[in-house]
Image (cartoon, rainbow, N blue to C red; front, side):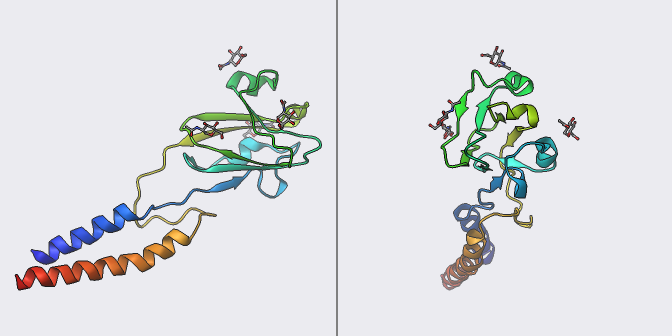
Length: 167
Ligand SMILES: *[C@@H]1O[C@H](CO)[C@@H](O)[C@H](O)[C@H]1NC(C)=O
Ligand SMILES: *[C@@H]1O[C@H](CO)[C@@H](O)[C@H](O)[C@H]1NC(C)=O
Ligand SMILES: *[C@@H]1O[C@H](CO)[C@@H](O)[C@H](O)[C@H]1NC(C)=O
Ligand SMILES: *[C@@H]1O[C@H](CO)[C@@H](O)[C@H](O)[C@H]1NC(C)=O
């Protein structure tokens, strides 16, 4: 009985204290970045974007930009009434995907018509199955922390179990 309580206590501590998956920063387009004549629908296919992840746009700062628009303006490549201008001027812009919804980004200056448009569906993070493989590109610090902390928690639970046995 004491052992069972101790194990359950240890598991609860481990589950509560450690986030399962760290946020991922996606470089839009991978190696080719944010540039003309890339099909970004194909790039996004099969990827999961979770609330808390980031998009990283890397491009020629003298030519393109990064604007969030609504679906209509995404489809028609209209940048006249963008919702958010993520262009900083460095050609390296980070966009937080901090709401669970659809996002639409285009480049203004005519480049949307050359394919510089991307629709991203942001999902809620999945419930943490402890056996799931880590997401590619995620920060491994948490898993290292987990490897250290879980045995410690179980030792504490075992010690507590001994005390319960004596009592
Ligand atoms: C991009 O790829 C998607 C999926 O294969 C396709 O439906 C779409 O027509 C392509 N877009 C362009 C501009 O070629
Ligand atoms: C997008 O914005 C334009 C201009 O403000 C508007 O006419 C259009 O209805 C909007 N589309 C959506 C899907 O909200
Ligand atoms: C977006 O912001 C950048 C940096 O402030 C600015 O240089 C640029 O003109 C803006 N783009 C649009 C389309 O307003
Ligand atoms: C999400 O990020 C955008 C861009 O930085 C910011 O304007 C907005 O306030 C943020 N929203 C939430 C809910 O944190």
